[in-house]
Image (tube, rainbow, N blue to C red; front, side, top):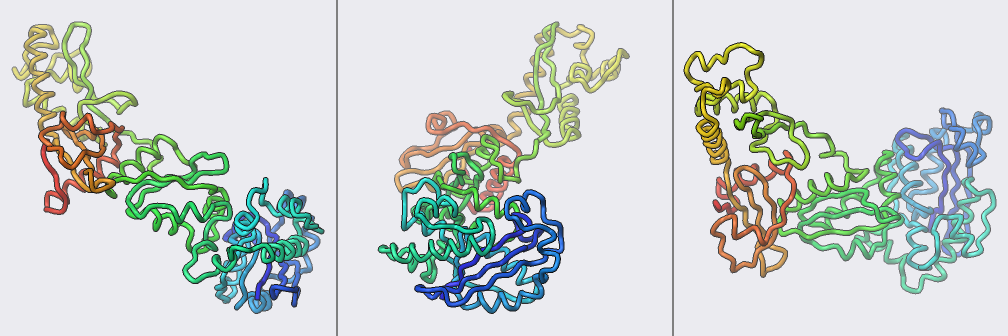
Length: 458
């Protein structure tokens, strides 16, 4: 037995909106055996644009029952039925949410006539209810009213039952089938063809633009997890409605998937990725030559398209490290921008500065000490590779950290001997780094130091 449902609401998500009208047609596969319709007082103003769309006004619902008063009757009509609607997750999420708020737990199998229409009658220009019914010559009386749209959905569903020569409806209802949870515009074949490998997946909208990028240890399993449950929140409902296709890129390891996900979020800036989109105000050491030829170390905010000598998250970390370099290599704090003003250089008075700030020390000698400081700084940063599984048995994955900086990653033939970083780079793709990526790699490296993963020094 099927319960074919349509509702009208004050807005697009259940958690902050209310139902204004419900229509339910109980259908046995041949005929409608029971009909139910009611307006519902939402106990909130109906937005003007919704009134214009549906024709349901605040005055019309003023004397209608609250949802609490009709919840038991609606639950009795729906329980033990197959819940059918056009874009079923919308109607189901609203009714499940509001029934739950009144003490009724709705659990039904679901069928979506958008999804079934795409599968059983492919190739139509649009699968919105109005356009689909127009293409199939199904009349709709009172469009955007619950009774009119539900009655049209009954006719549409009867036609789909008649034309279902490939048992698409039975397949969607089969135990273990995930189709009833999938977004209405996403072809189930795309989900079934996803690999069971680590990698990155992309959700695309109708125009092919990337909506969301995610990482996974198992791509197919992770993608399916997005569609389970009936979260009534606005972000999730909009998210599901806008997914039209999925693509993916397999990676050898979960770590590589995490790195690639971060790179792609920064590159594509997808609308539904909220994490990792904050600006990173990291700092770095930069070295430049002044007009007198002296090399000068400076702390500045990390800039795009520049390669600092060393990066750090907090300014105080940079000051502490710079002071250490000044002491260790007798650098001038004025030339390192740690002492300002026109007064005498304090380390010069203490004989730890050799007079470069007053041009008493030659450029060549001072610059050599600056270069020694830079070399020492770089030597303190680890260089290593992380080798792991490849995408197949013929290759191994490789992530290169060079002097504390993430160089890139890629795949090597298994027979390649890793002897140093230079012989690796022809196999690797350079990628931009960020604090999230560095954190992933450092955490992984620390775990390997305890024997969890293989790390080899380059």
